[in-house]
Image (cartoon, rainbow, N blue to C red):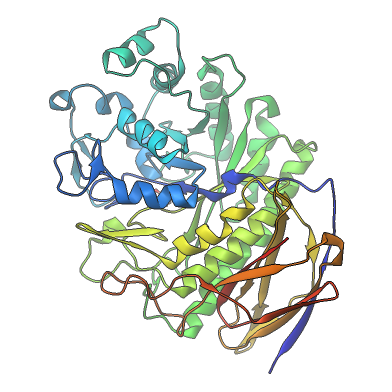
Length: 495
Ligand code: AHR
């Protein structure tokens, strides 16, 4: 049975720009994300630049990743950056208290990360240690990375081989302060934030530093309210929000062999992002009606059981069509809330949680989520085209979810992009969009789909799921009619 949905498009010159930073990524010292992921060391047989895998750099450059968050996550509030600079033989070890209790040698530190960001042509987003660090330590880190005059920290940087400062703009003031970042109350953290933010100077005097407060977990609206009430807007660049699509923290289910029940539950959690950003943004509107402070969803994605035989603390999971649908729908939500959501970070980039890249020794594969991020990068810095429609329902047992997720934008070259996701696991959906106001003469489309929801790219079959040309649509008299198969994601380009 076919559903018919009519979508209307509003051409609105005042619509917001979809910040490219919505398409950000996250790299934590966790499992095989950094060590044995990005970083193999410069003596590795795997082709690398200063120890960073060249194949990963190329793949991420093709994604146009706009920013990369590091070194955590929970790890950030245990990390002392001075342990990761200077000659390797002098660097102390650190035991990763949160992730598997493994001992790290600090061989990947500030220089390695910031130089890697230059290779990736991406902006670094550093997460500062508030939980177990000091104000001085974080202020020193900013001086070390950003100050171009004479100072103790910039002199040390130069001594360690880097003359020009990196001028890091994005600074997280702690992470999950309500949990692994120190188990603080919102009121206590707001005061800590004010203190840290005061001493984290913009050494370049360019007005360029953006301080981001550790934000709420999912529907903890009181956290956002308390921060917005107690921290003056001028001290706040952004307020974070973390939300993972997890079925049940005690029984997360397999990443690959899941049932439709579990798929439905994951998608319910993913689509909850709509309500979360709407409600957190409404609270922010009360205290910041001009929308100067960004909502930064700096951790999102699907979280399942680890793959069998892997370290439970390493959070290594496969990535199926479920994750592609999840990513497409979530990114549509962010795009449609571009007036407040101006940054987001998928957790995490390589070998951890909803990764875009998985590695196994010298092998590297791109996951279905990678392909979604690639298809969607056309929305980066494009003007949102507001759309309205009533979605048909994806019915499962006695429950239902909106089956369709859509967002649209127009880029600076005048190209229009419409991204469409059919969340329904069994029914195709027919969409009609009157695009006559957009002046589109020709359209082409790409689809990401597969036979089974549980399909994935493996090291033996790395190209099982890749974007394909999609032609099952018509453009007639300004009306676009398109039939979108179950659990698939389509990107349409019009000019
Ligand atoms: O992304 C994994 C972990 O999830 C992060 O370290 C933490 O911030 C969150 O709880």
